[in-house]
Image 1 (cartoon, rainbow, N blue to C red):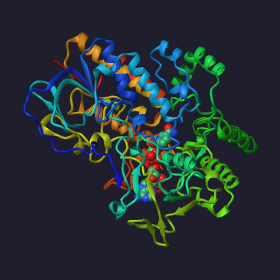
Image 2: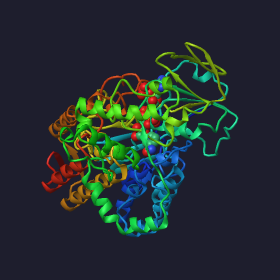
Image 3: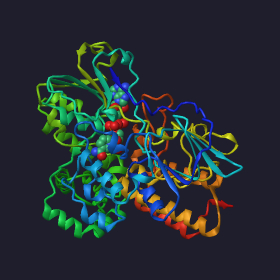
Image 4: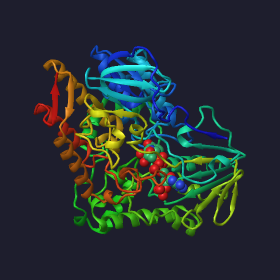
Length: 553
Ligand code: NAP
């Protein structure tokens, strides 16, 4: 039996006869970004409807229910900042909250601001076509319903198009198999089950840590290891929560200054000015502290300079060797193809200790590749593994996958899929030449992609909202970027990659996915200049009267 996402796949549009339901604004997606986008428009008294393909709101936090799913952003930096009342009434129970708590939070926000009345669930958008005569978008849903709007705002999620591995025989398996994104809403009793996890990214690392020692056998199928670091999670006491509440202004101000939008900003000292013994002591401190400090609070050179990165990587490699009892297993868990922090760092709780359980087995797919999935398990080049459950923690068609799923048709019948075939092109990560009034809230080339998501999308949503207000004031109804502005921004995005070791990553940051045809080459998907610089850039464009955007009636 396979649990798959049924409502997700784009199907050719079948336009039902009838009149589309018109709203001035349509937002697609009821995740963290869409909820705020909707609130902003509803609060301003605008005519808006939100279309969400799932049965309820929450996006990532609605769908990712696998064991161990939780934040790696500090909880209190993840909540929305727009309402002091909301900040003061919500209590986070842990420094890094688990998925159910985050989903409750998003539901609370929707109730508090009465947003559900604008939301329509089970609305899988398959096509959005710009009508050049009317200057409106015509939207088709999978079930044949039609909507239309002047402004189409996308909040599709960065990681909402799950991708199973390309392994023969997947359909033959007679046990249960599922992608982590499709974990059932009812808990699975796995204590007497033989479980396989394929994939060791952030998701795999969380699920492996969580299942180790709690299932009969846990077989981890690893292609390449990742550099992981301790999350160092802990409960938040009521006293601490009170302090946090009285400090929100400075917490958000701190996040606004850092490239990642987290409370962790890079250390200002030059790597070469700090003696090796002090560097090591500094890394020991970071390793013992909560959250992304070890990655984002480090010397800048660890992300830009090969030698600094190699030294940092060796420090973390030693930590792995200390934590894993079997030296041969430890070596397999140490990445050899990239340095620490070049890929997004999975934050873990007892991940390395998981491999000290007798019931947890690491299978190195470089040594013994999977040949096929059979009716009863997984066949590698070395042996067969008998299984009850196969978990695909194999990641997503990141960032552009959720756009490709919808057939966006712009001016002159051009599709976004075709336009972005070689990688996305955007102006500011907000608009695309030839697709007027399509406004991406946290799309490719924006800062939301690789940073503390709510901090970044608040910037994008506020900016888009100001843009729409400016258009209203000027009596303009159509906005689109010039081709030149789009080309310049897209070049800028490419240049930013070249300054960092990130350019070498073979991960979703560079659009790499081994399971998707054509995604084995570098695609420039993220704004790698830092959320703070991105915000400044957007602010400058608005202050200068939106150069690069053509606004017409
Ligand atoms: P991911 O980082 O893309 O990892 C996918 C994993 O699957 C990789 O280990 C990959 O190996 C492996 N894989 C892919 N195809 C395979 C195949 N055919 N055979 C064997 N292995 C295969 O995906 P993810 O772990 O879902 O994480 C995606 C992102 O979600 C994260 O980077 C993070 O931004 C976010 N996330 C956040 C949290 C959090 O906030 N705490 C938690 C989970 C996820 P290779 O690397 O060798 O290709």
